Image 1 (spheres, rainbow, N blue to C red):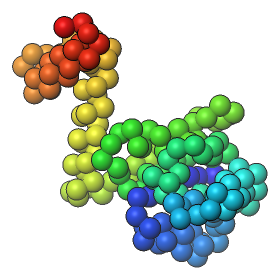
Image 2 (image 1 turned 30 degrees about the vertical axis):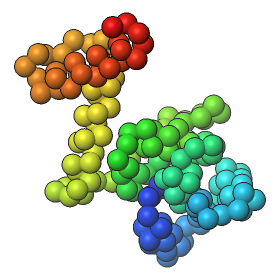
Image 3 (image 1 turned 90 degrees about the horizontal axis):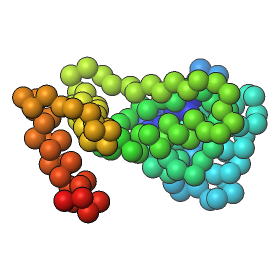
Image 4 (image 1 turned 60 degrees about the vertical axis):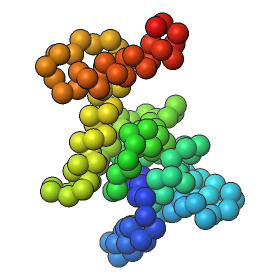
Length: 160
C-alpha cells in the first residue's frame, strides 16, 4: 500500500485518474470532506486489502491520520517546510507499523522543486546541528546562519 501526498487538487485528480486507469483502487483524503467521509476513507485504506493507494492532500491529511497499513509514502509535490513533509511521513510511520517506511520525494531535475528540496534539506541540517551541538567548520557558509540560530536558541532558553 502507498500513501500519495500532493498539495494541489489538480495533481491529486490527475493521480487518481492515472491510478484508476491502471486498475488500482484508491481512496482520497481532502480538506473538503466531512469527518465521516474522511474516516471512511482512512478505514477503507487501512482495512480493505483491495485499496492500494490513498491519495491525500498534504495539508488535510498531514496531521491526525493513521495510515500504518502502508509502508511507502510518495511526496509528489514538496512543501516549503520540512515539518509539513515530516508530518506527512509520520502518518505512515506510527505505532503499530510493522514494516520499514520508505518516503519518496518526486523531484524533476532543473526545476523549482530541486531548489526547494535543497533549501529544505539545508534548513533541516542547520537546525539539527544547532540542536545537537555538532561543530561546524567556521569557513562554511552555514556557520553564520548556525551562529545566529544558536544565539536565538540560547536567548530563548535564557542562557544568554
